[in-house]
Structures are given as structure tokens and as C-alpha cells.
Image (cartoon, rainbow, N blue to C red; front, side, top):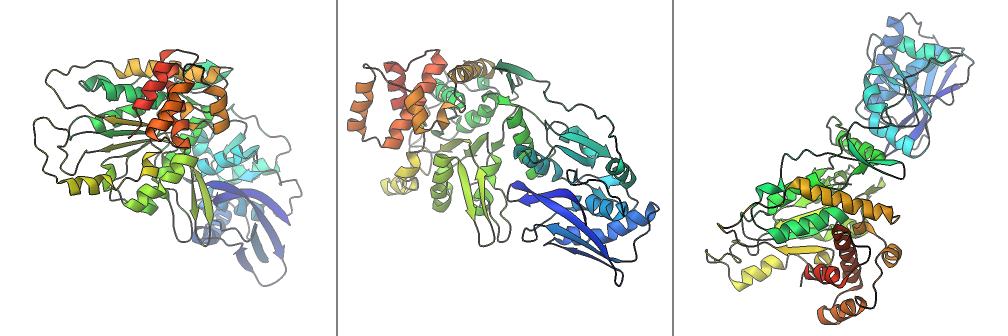
Length: 502
């Protein structure tokens, strides 16, 4: 029995698959076993044609391909190349067990790419399971950005067979370990960012309080809720926020590219973080992921590392809003089905916008509100206290005035975010302030004799929960970082408390 290695998706992560081959005496037949989907079972015809087109004789025996482990569902046309290679190698006695082989075959034996290759191989690399692989040459430009793997690109089945038979492997081009973007360097690690702002905060007139909250939210990845009249600039701020987010290191950029591919897009390998903005009529499955047989990633998972923006927040279903509490707190989402259970990372900055009442004119100084008290209460009661407790920054937008002027630009805000980012890294933090654990809060957000009475008094006056206290401390820590201070001061703590929804 001979075997090569391949892989398939198991949820959002890849699982290694052993492609095993035997040829036994009996009536000529070609069988693939091991819970293969239609794309794999159809590979028999592609493999036969590719072998015959390249001068190989199809053995007149009973051929069996087993995809192990047999209880794991396999999918993808990238199994074509390892299956064909095992049949073509015949009596070859060399060691093939360390080779990963991926590629879809054309009828003439040409090797083409599969859209799932990049996320599969990146997942294998993150698990430390792969060192070298044969892949379609057309995929090298994307795959070569994954470090610590030796890739051999091939265009035909014959080239792949020559590599597998070779006693001395050819030299390969070195992989691209860095990106050509502006970057910060901290302890030998590059953190990449861009200085291109197609949507600029300078376009927003007035709303200085909201711009300040956007700066704090970006610097520490704190959840933000903007409430104001229609046209006050809520969506403008949310859409510009993604351009002033903290820098990304190499692995984070690769993960962002993985999410782009899972969404069906061509990866850009850009330091721009994801921005997801589902409509309020979206179903729970489209937002959180799901599926009867195979769990698919949803908007929450696709927003990992970036921004999830809910416009018209109270119009989202009660079920969706309450289910959002888990990823907001734990920063991952679990999808449980009868056939599968999957956990997705969901470490995103949640931004929401809402009107103060159904008609939107409650805060207006020029237009009368048409809503009754009952309608306003019903509108706001769609947001439960446990949900609002997970919002770090609550901001009421000011009424639009003719005297409002442009002020700070995205370039200036982004510079402050990068400076705050470096201060967090210099303290030894692996995560930004918004994602600190309880133990990390005690370590990085200590209070002195001046600030401790302030939080004690706030707990008694406002009835803050333990979660609210932790979030206030994390916001205060970010405010201090934005101001360039090593310790949390009284002014930082009071400003953090002013952002709590009461």
C-alpha cells in the first residue's frame, strides 16, 4: 500500500487526510471509499483521462483509493492530483509519507488550482502539520506568503510525478515573509498599516465627542454604540473607523486573506481589517453561521479581527441580539448541529448605530417627535440590559448645526491609534485592551489611592456589575494610552464612566 497526504475542511480548520492506494487481483474496477463527496467521486473520470492522455496505462486490476480517516467527510477537487499520482507511480518504492499533494486535474493532465487551497494550507501551517507540499504553480503567488513551508509548483501531472520520484529535489524560490506596506517594528515583529484614507474623518463636521469615542474604540478595540437623529453622522463614523484600526502582524494579515477566500473573494493581503455590515433583516444563520450538515461561517466569523457594524440596531431580531452576547463576551462563537460542532474565532470590534426613537426626531431641536411614550419604550426595550452591559462606549450624537466645522483627519487619528498600540505592546500585552482577561486587567489596569475611591463610588451610585467595572477599567486604560500616560488617572476613569449607558 502506498499513500500521500492531502487535507479537507473540518468546520473552519483543516484536517489531514491520508490518501491510500492498493491494486489487487480481480475484475478491473476503480473505487474511492472514505466518505468522499461528489467532487471527489467524480475525480475517477478526470484521473483516467489525465493518465491516458499522458501515456500512462491504466492498470487492469481492482484499484481502491481510501481516504483516511474514514469517518471524516471529505470535499474538494484538490484530491485529484494525489489520487492520480499514486496510480501512476505503480511499483515505486520511495518514501512518500511526508508529501502533501494538492491540485485539480484537467482531462489533459494539467494541474489547476482550487479556491480552498489557501485556507486549508494556512490552517495546516498554524497547526504545525505541514513542511512541504506540491501545489498548482498558479497558486504559488498566494501560497508562498505562508511561512515555514517549502512549496513546489507544478503545471502538469508529469511534473508532479518527477518531483515525487526525484532523489534530489530542485531548489525552490524563498517564500515572501514580509509585505510591502508601512510598518512598525516591536521586538523584531513587523506590524503593518496603510495611510490611504478613501473615507476621511475630516468629512464629518462637528460631533467632536463621537470622534473622540471612535478614537478610543479603535485604539483598544472597544464596542461602540452611537445614538442620534437621522443624518447626524453615525454611519459615516462607523465606515471611517475601519481605516484607523491598529496595525496587523504577518499572521493576522494571512488570516484576513483566509476570511476573504471563505467569502468567495480574491485575497488582497492588505493591512485593512475586515468590515462587515449585515442588513437588519438577515437571518441568525447568516450572521452566526450554520447549516444542517456542514456548519458554514457567518458574518460574525468573517468579521474576526475587524469591525462588525449593525446599523438600525433595534430593528435586528431579538434572537440575533441576544445570541450576539456570547461572541461579545467570549470572542468566539460555537455552532452546534447534530452532525457537527464548530467553534469560530470572533474577536471583532462591534459598532452599532440607532435612532433615539422610531421616528428618529427625539433629540432634534427643530423637528417634533411623533412617537408616543409607549412606542419609545417598546423601541428601546428591544435592547436588553445584559446586551447593553457589553457595550463599552455609548455616545449620544449632537444635533447638526450650521456652525459645525471639520476638525481632525483620519491621518491624525490613525497616528494616535498607532502610538497607543505601541504603548500596549511595550507593556507586554499580547492582546489589545478591549480583550484583556480578568487577570490581565489586574496586571495592566491597576488603580492608585486617588482613583480607587472613584470606581468604588461609581459602583454604589450607578449599580455597576462586575462586567461593567472591568469594561470601565479597560476603557480607562485605553484613554490613558491615547493621552500617553503610564498610569490610569482620575480624569481617565471619569471619562470612561461617562461613556457607560445609564
